[in-house]
Image (tube, rainbow, N blue to C red; front, top):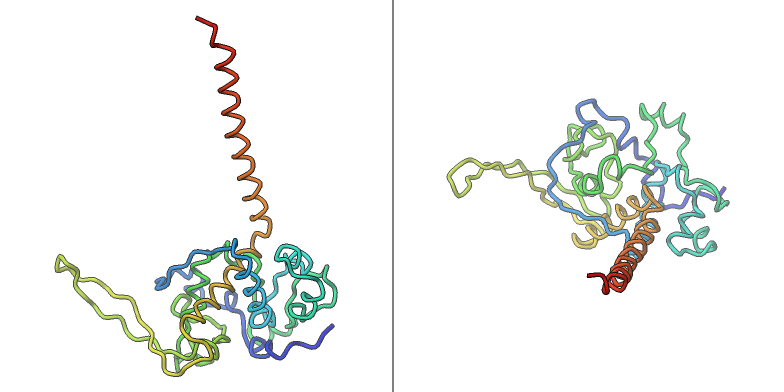
Length: 254
């Protein structure tokens, strides 16, 4: 087994992001300040997302229902490049993507094993995951110094803080709509220290990561969509031919 890539070390400190949570937080139906639509048809984005996930998430979180070989085949990544850049916990392409963190030990350290993320975007929806990753903020009342707008009380530290920078959440202010009725404005964030990425670069980073997670949750979706389009095209052509054939047969019937 290979030595864990140095970029995974910050992620090894992460606890269960979606598992070890207070009961009231499990629903995670908070405000969604960011809109997001996944684009798994953007192969370059999904490839970048795979890189992001392996470097920042796989130290704690597995994708136990996806194999490295399937990932490489679907995303057009040659086996040698896959082994060199994405396979940090195994030397066998046929292995499932497993976390480097020992499950039993992590449960003892953090109270729960960090959850597998293979189908998270199907359970939570892509927009939820995108907003979750975008809305960490500093909170001195939390043990690790950060909290999350979408999932208050989340146990996971902000492992992407060095990229995004650190931000604080400002209280929402009441406003009035055009009819004079009270309208509640959502909370906003204020950057207090810069990260290594600009706002646009970080948004793209998160979008790529979520696109990869959407792909991982349903690897066969692209093939099904492609086949579905072909079937629809065939049915349209067949319908046209059938109509022409019917017209030819019935043209002499009065």
